[in-house]
Length: 320
Image (cartoon, rainbow, N blue to C red):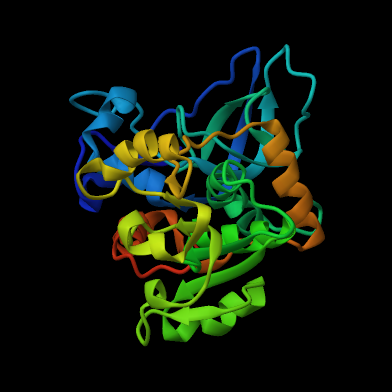
């Protein structure tokens, strides 16, 4: 089978498409023919190992899992003898950031893994990006107690995580403001944002808003700059560590004082979250934003585009 392989850490050019052995499912696994996957920030982070801590999971000196790709959509082609939940022919989508493997024509996934049946009206390309941005967004919205009566601000509202956060916060009943560049103001309004700040024209941190939660989905601001926007017990969360890892330290210190605080939740995903995102995607209440689509042979270009920090929503990879 064809797969995008990286045998060393580094820039996008360390990835190449090669022929490798087709995986064989164990007794508790399914074999999935992949039709669509994504290139996202998680893939980029594990490929580059820019954050050295990632090597403790992916391999200290070289990649332990050479085929990246954590989001997938495809059709089950074989099942292990102990699998009972799925059958051959099922169209499935899912997420795997422990072993990855979706940047290939085939991958295996545990029957108990984070996976579900694709809603009938969704294509593989529409189903593939449901979980990465969605689960990261929920992993931050839940700890911030986002719900009815809450007012939140999403910085970076057009990214995969930010655009998911805008839609999911609306689903949870919150009032949402968001930040983006001039060309995407209407996109954010269509996703449910109330007030949209154009960062090329104004500094959102100088606005007169009072927010229960400021979510920096691109990690380009800071608690210091956003603090004035928060209500007395408001919460700030960033998807990045911040300068010199400050968000970790602030998450340890600021809750002690009982006022405005920083949280740094670790992202989690489980079957309940998968089913929620599936239900919302099925009803149309949540629709992942798609920017560009590449085929597998163009995966280096896809990585380069994602790392340009210009992408809007998700970048899809389709298989031959």
